[in-house]
Structure formats: structure tokens, C-alpha cells
Length: 339
Image 1 (spheres, rainbow, N blue to C red):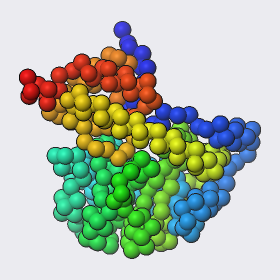
Image 2 (image 1 turned 90 degrees about the vertical axis):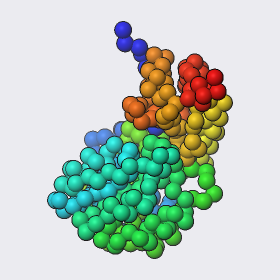
Image 3 (image 1 turned 180 degrees about the vertical axis):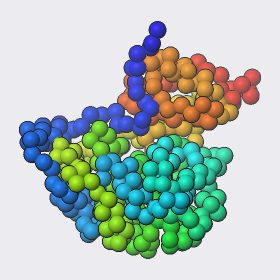
């Protein structure tokens, strides 16, 4: 018998639907669905640029951040080139590399779930065209601090484009966060990737954007699909930018629940590292496989990497309480060691 999914905590989605003002903007756009959107998303690009306080020719918009990443790969990668990234990471990167004709080069994470910057640099060679960093990292939630990131960027050869994926940056509360505008000014081979899917709760509408140098963004834009950004999504993003203070409160609530969830799990004996995304990461030697099975039996859908770890999206309080109640019944490695 199939167990119904009561809480979907597998895709790092927001637990909140779009704000009422955003839904109203979407409904108005739906009424004009018989009209084409802009051939190129110039108006949306200009809005995002003004919001980010950068010139519009330094912004590329795409179908989710993954769409912008694909445009980048197609712009800079030639068949037989390599794309380097930490592994495990966002599942799309090896797929995008293959779509662009590149050879994926995965570099193992460090034992504590961080991206190994030294090993990533060592993997770069004359055929490397892109190196990917996720900050905060997906799925572990670890963070590359400002000084470490600056040092890494200084050592990357200029023929390699650095794709800095900041899909979860709104959830990071570390005081040592990188200064993205300064990094962009110093490194013309850097593209910072962001999305409206996570913190802004518009995952189904597929809007992401990249910030980079004029030359790099121009090359990415040439891969833009005509009429590729739909009008409903455009309306939703524009309304979300106007409701930023309301959305910030939602993000603060998710962060508070993340810290509560982590604290309660630690008190139960789980060894949960500090995370900076909208999720928490559980890893061996704690019983992650047994935890995934127990959660599935309780109707909680999570992201399970068998033998490697368990990523729990932070849901609403009810969902998080269900997680805590379910995992409380499992003996952890720490609790077993004390027995």
C-alpha cells in the first residue's frame, strides 16, 4: 500500500504560496495569455538590474537559474572541454555539462561536507571552461567564507569561467558572507547565479538570473530563447520585488525554523552541522538510510542519498515537528556510543 505524501521536504521549496499581491499580479497576466511575452525579457532584466543596483547589461535572465547556467555552458564550452564541480552537488550540473558537449569532472566534498577548494583548483587544466561553486552549498548547506572565496577566485585561470551558484544566499546569516558586487568588479570571468524559486517561492514559474561582466553576459544573452520568459512569471517577479519586506519576513521564519530543527535534532543525538540554506543535512555515521525509511513511512518526502546523507527541506512548523517525532525514535551513532 502506498503511503500518501503529507509533507514534501525533498526539493528545497518554500513552504509558503505566493503572497496575495503576487497572486493578483499573476491573475492579471493570465487574462492576457493570448498575447506573446517580450521577444527578449528586456523589461524584466531592467527591473532586476535596478533592484541589484547594477547596469542592465550585466544581467542575464533565464528559465530558472538552471536555464541561465545552460546558456552559460553553451556560450563558453566547446565539445571535449571540461566542467569541474564539487560532488555531490545540484544534480543538474553534470546533465548541463553533457548537454553542452563537455566532460564532467566531479571533485569529492571534504569529509565535513564542504567544497574542497584546493582540490577544485587542482582539477583545472587547459581544457577546463567552467568551474562551479554553490554558496551556500547544495545539499550540505556549507558556506565558503569571503576570504576563502576571494583567494579561490584569484587562483582560477582567466580562461575558466567561475559559476557561483547563490540560489540559497537569502537564507545565509553568516557575518563573513562574500561581497558579491566587489567580486564581480574584480573578476570578469565570474558569473553569479541567483533564482526566484527558493526564497521568493516561485519555483513553478522558472525565473533565474545571472550577474557578470558586460562581455560575459553578452555572450550568455546570445543563447537566450526568444519569447522564453512567460508573462505570468514576469508579473510575479515584478510584484515580488515590490513586496520584498514581506518576503524577508518569510525567509526569517524559515531560518528560525531551520535553527530550531537543527537544535532539536542535535538534542536527540544527531550530528547536524550548521547549515546556511533552507535545509538541514544529516550524514553518516548517523542512521540516514533508516531515517529516510522512517520518514517515508510517516508520509514525509525527503532527499535521500543512500549511504551518503539526507537533506531535509525546512517546512512549516507542523512538517518539522513530524520530522522530529519520527527521527526521535531512531538510535543515533552518538546515542549508541554512550550506551
